[in-house]
Image (tube, rainbow, N blue to C red; front, side, top):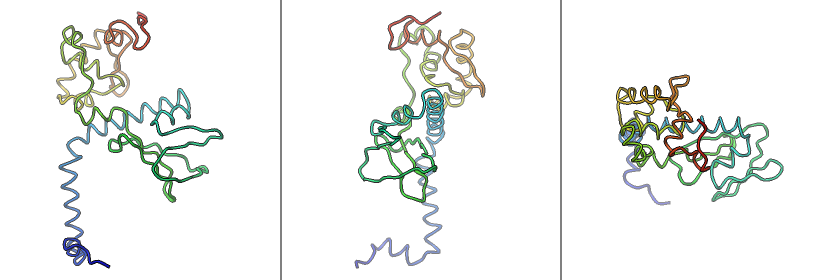
Length: 223
């Protein structure tokens, strides 16, 4: 058996010193890598959970599961098949299936089947590509000229209801900078404010964003 590398041998030789050293290295890694973007990551994950929950309530289990990722398919007799690099079979038997959105598994997904852990599908969160590119969806140029850049940017960002603080983090703005444009959009009837102070587009705001037509239909939005 080959001896461990010199660095590993030093760590193994003094466990009392190694533990705090590794702990500090992990803490420093957290501060330098995930921590600066963690508020935006948390927003992304919470938004994904909200969307999946609503989809489950409105459409049911099968569309929710098969909509997670192209590798997830539904078969007869309630069998879920996931294309993965390894082969495994797990009968839920009342244990349930956990759906875990992640900002770190794109474009693949991860499947946890081994006992004693709960069966879990770790799937890419919606919008994760925008997270690492920075910023949200760009506002149409004509709309920015009409409303102003910040108001148009916020209107375009409301694919899902969002709070003032979440919108501010997503676009690198202060909450105060976001608050006034949102108020103007709400007073114009383009967005509405929901419980927990989350803003959402109104049908009028959606029609304005898409040039007076419902996206994908070619039909004018009802007034």
